[in-house]
Length: 217
Ligand SMILES: *Cc1c(COP(=O)(O)O)cnc(C)c1O
Image (tube, rainbow, N blue to C red; front, top):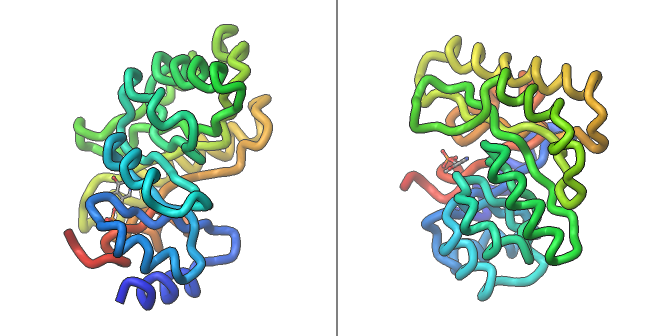
């Protein structure tokens, strides 16, 4: 079923939309089932779980960290993480830069924008985002590369609500693409199992899908 669901969803995605298979709580056996289809991008949202899985699973998997990342845990994933989606504070970004510098590498990151109603979801608001992007200390960070934005809509059945939230991050994304000095700013990570089809209408370039592939948790 896993392979079948994955291939079905992939075949329906527009060519410019990347798929990250969200494998949190799933076993290595289930992940390997997805891997066997040729898929290589997987997303996890707990550091320990990610570190354990990465140690055992094939080395050509591109691991996306999609959860809320605590600064003191950056060091555990910095050596191998492919993209950090949920950067939600300047403090965290500075720590990622520091750990990447130690490894003499550049870590690609997405800035998470708070669009949902739920206070439990993380992210910058527009004012915080702009003030960080405009400060000299941010511009001096040499070991991170901001390649786009990430957002999570409110968990809701009301499509209009989800649409309004995706529009906020879409407009911000498009403005930054035109007006900021960030190079390679081309990734908009919005859309999960329940709302990825809507997200694609609002410029998503990367969807993060778990339960529609593995079955509900
Ligand atoms: C769990 C999770 C997903 C995937 O959710 P599904 O509803 O299972 O597709 C996507 N993004 C984040 C940040 C998640 O934590």
